Length: 504
Picture (tube, rainbow, N blue to C red):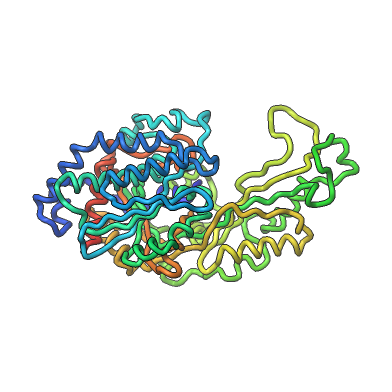
C-alpha cells in the first residue's frame, strides 16, 4: 500500500453529494449569479479539463528513473501560466528543478499551494491499459475513469484545481484569495532537495504572507466518505549495501557457489544486519535510540482514533489492503492506533546476485536492501539516520553502507487552524461529517511549511475519487455513475467553493 491509499480507502461519513448550482451559491459569500456563471464554465470546459489531464499524464515524469522530469517541469509551468499564475519560475536545485509562481487577485487573504509533478515508476506489463496512454476506461460501479500513472497521485486533483482557476476566470471573475505556488519533481524519491526550493528568499517571503498551504487531493472513498488528517509521518528512504569490497571478507566479484564452503557471504552478512533492526516477528523497530523521542498519542488523539474505528468499515479496509488479519490479530481500533503512533522499519526490496529465470549457482559479492523508516512526532530524520548507522556499527556491521536517498521530518497542524476549519465547513455544507485523524500514515514534505521558519498550517483537500497510487491501473474518476462520488466536474467545483471558504 502506498503513502495515501489507506486513509483514502478507509475514509468516513457516507453522504449523497449532488453539488447543484444552488448549493454552490448557498455556501459562499458571492452572489448566486456569479457562482452560477462559474458553474456553467465548469460544465462548458469539461472536455478541456479532461484533455488537459490526459496531456499531463502522457508526459512521463519519473524522478527515480530520471525520465522526462525536465519536460514534466516545463509542461507544469506552462499549465500554471495558462491558469493565470504570473512570474512562473523554474527553481534549480542539486536535483530536479522546482517551480515557484504567484497569482495576485488583489484579495485580502493569501493561500499557499503545494504541487508535485513527478510520478512513480510503472511496469506496462502489469497494467490493463498502458500507464502513459491516459485512456478513458469504463469502470463498473464508478463510471468513466482516466487510467494512467499519476492519475490520482497527484495529477488528477492538481489538474482539477487548475480547471477551477480556468472556470473562475472564464466567468469573468477573480479568485477570492491570492495564491502562492511551490512545486517539486522529487516527491516520489523522498523530496531530497525540496528545502532548496522553499527556503529561497523570494519564496520564503511570499509564503510568509500565506495563512496556510494545501495540496489538492481526491479524498472521497467509494461510498462518499471523507477522512481528514492533521499531519503526516516523516520518512527516511535508504539503501543498505553489503559488499565484499567494503567488508573485507567474502569475494570482491561473483564466484561459484561451491566456494561458500570456505568463503563468507556478503548477502548473508546483510541478512544478519537486517535481523537486528526489528523484533523477531519483524513488527517492532529495534534500532538503538531510534524511537526514543516518539511522542505518545494524546488523549485527544486517542479519542479521534476510537471515533474513526467506530465509524469506519473494518471489512472494507481489509479488502482494500488484501489482508485477512491485522498485526498480532489486534482489534481494528488497536490497528488504527498502531498506524497512527508507531514508527516503522520496512523492507521495500532485496536485491543480490542472480534474479532471472532458473538458477545460477553463484556466491554474489554484493547485496542491497531498500528500506523506508516512518517517523512520528517528535522524531527527526537526521537523528533517526544517525541512530541506524550507530546501531549497525555497534553490532559489527559498520562496513555496510547506508545511503539515504530522501526523507524528512513528520508534520502536524492544529485542528483549530483556519485552513482546517474551512475544510470542515465545506464538507459539512455537503452533508459530510468528516473523520479527523491525527496524521496520515504516509508521508509528504509538509514539514518545510509547518516547521521553522514558516510555521504554517498545512493539509490536503478535494472531492473526487481515485485509487491505485504506486500500483498498476491507477485511476481518477472523470464521469461518476456513483451518486455518492464526484467526477472531475464535482472536484473542480469543490476547489472553487473551498477557495471561497478560505476567503472568509
